[in-house]
Image 1 (cartoon, rainbow over the protein chains, first blue to last red):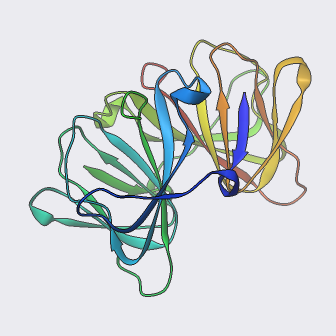
Image 2 (image 1 turned 30 degrees about the vertical axis):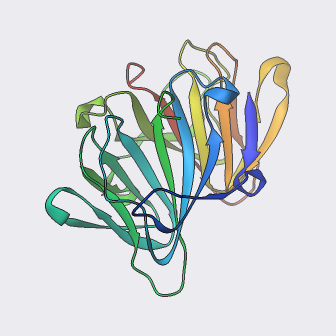
Length: 116
Length: 116
């Protein structure tokens, strides 16, 4: 059993091509003995975004705070804000964008442990 | 891709023996095509709790709001509150208790999709 506050977790800027103003915290993962999946938190600054990409792993999301959009296939935008959940299926194109002017977008992005 | 607000999800009282003032919302699961794991949200009323039990599936938790404790093996209490994460390993005894007097405890409880 492990309990941890988000404030205790190191935050690193996402360096992938296509990312802008996006930071990641790896909160719970296989390094903690998690058998199946991992919890990361992304912080996206106003006007920032993650890469518009796809991969074999799904994402399960919860928006902790802020507002923005989840961009899907063909650029379709799904509004997301605090209290919203999302499922991105394997190999679906996706991007998280912060559309606000002044507040960060924080979201949980859970993935199978094999992803990281 | 699916996005949904927690307010759109049906809430059901937890009927398991040992539960008191606990409610569950199944937000994302295999019914949505989630390949690996499911996101549920538990709401525990002040003074309420989930059963003190164990099972083969792990839990990954995020505390959305409120405060309480996560009871572990031998009754050891881990304080949890908004912004905290937890990992409960397979076959670890655990219980979520709301220790506040006036506010609900809301937490994400993620499990492998086989659990539900």
